[in-house]
Length: 368
Length: 167
Ligand SMILES: Cc1cc2nc3c(=O)[nH]c(=O)nc-3n(C[C@H](O)[C@H](O)[C@H](O)COP(=O)(O)OP(=O)(O)OC[C@H]3O[C@@H](n4cnc5c(N)ncnc54)[C@H](O)[C@@H]3O)c2cc1C
Ligand code: SF4
Ligand code: SF4
Image 1 (cartoon, each protein chain N blue to C red):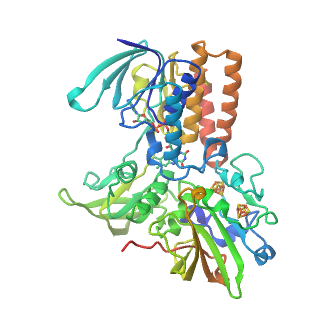
Image 2: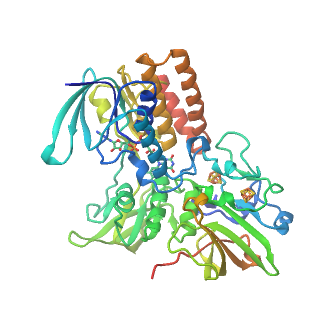
Image 3: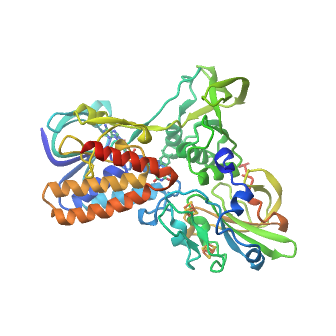
């Protein structure tokens, strides 16, 4: 069994910043990620990030990822890529499958004093007739194809969902050269930021609110050929006779994300259902520590938000770990953490942030 | 709000915002128009301006606004805004023409002198335009800024061009 002071699972913005903050203060940190490249969502985000200038906004996600990776290297974070944490067992033991190509696969058990779960989120699916046809995919999958693998997922695309993910991925599919025939939203109002909506509308993509998809038509061999869409009533039920048909070869679904929290649950960390933050997630305190001492959670796996909040939550966990391992005096640690909390609270203001602020406050209260 | 229903701001919605340049200011020369009317956690536009002409008064989620007397219409803020929501409008371009500068992150880029189809906030073609400048420097970090010349009366309507298709 391998032993480590701190193990961070997931190398997105949350995991990277947790690892950096702990390693910076001399903790010995191992960071593992199932992908071939660290950075999580960041390397798919070719757009300039919104957020505060203090959070490197106005800079593209890919470039933020590069900076974080360099910093992690500078402070001596050990990184294992192509490794998936398959289980979390009592007394902080992590089961890891190393090297995911089948030939050289090995299994390791790591005993860690501190663990950060920073596994991000997974996409929600929606089911409709024909949804298993080739060509129906998550918006995240389409984004990975276009931006990581340089493969256009389709020529004519219909996007379902107008949250920021649906809007931004639509924009990036246009940039990649596809035609996006429209964005559908079942709710009466667009879910994402107006500025993101406005830039795709200006580029010629209509957004249809109070509209949903009812059927994907095509066949298993050639994939999607048509999408049948329909207006919905106040209860989100399709209004008969209002169907419309789009000729498309791809249907992408951006119906929200939910925290990837299975590892926390497996270890018995208490979880709660918080709809404003994407669903089931591990409860945590102001140090991002779960109900099991020594296990922390940060980023989208602690409630789906944004890269900026993920970075800050990761920092909180990293500082708290350095503190409890005795690498930093608690007075110093609390003043750093207070600064971070002030910044995070600032990010959770306004009509888009308020419900998340409330939910996060409730989580911390419930915890106590 | 039209923005939430259809995804674009109506002109009257925009004109109701604090910081929308006054008629006098438009008549004086190039000025930035910020079309960012929701309280979102974002502020790089403030730092982008060397003249202190963009202000977010309270917390980061407050809406940005132009201080019209400080803005010289240099256009530096256009490429810095991740929402691609800032435009520079010059109503005084020439006798009967105005110019509009906007971010354009699609390939192929238009060339100077090219005749283009100018679109409004809704993405609809409203008139023809002529490309008079394309800036794609390092500082803009891969957000090219295109300036087109359009009939003067379209200065508060035109906000982009129809995407060009690769041949
Ligand atoms: C289309 C889109 C646009 C966005 N635009 C913005 C924006 O403009 N501004 C902004 O602030 N935010 C934006 N975001 C949100 C932002 O990307 C996420 O909130 C952020 O990446 C969350 O960070 P994270 O570290 O929690 O998770 P992630 O970035 O998802 O990283 C999680 C990592 O964990 C790894 N992992 C998961 N499970 C395991 C396991 N069992 N073992 C090993 N590794 C594992 C994954 O491979 C991944 O690398 C956008 C998101 C999307 C999808
Ligand atoms: S156009 Fe120039 S002066 Fe005016 S707000 Fe933008 S950066 Fe500032
Ligand atoms: S940078 Fe752009 S999107 Fe962000 S607040 Fe300023 S105008 Fe709005």
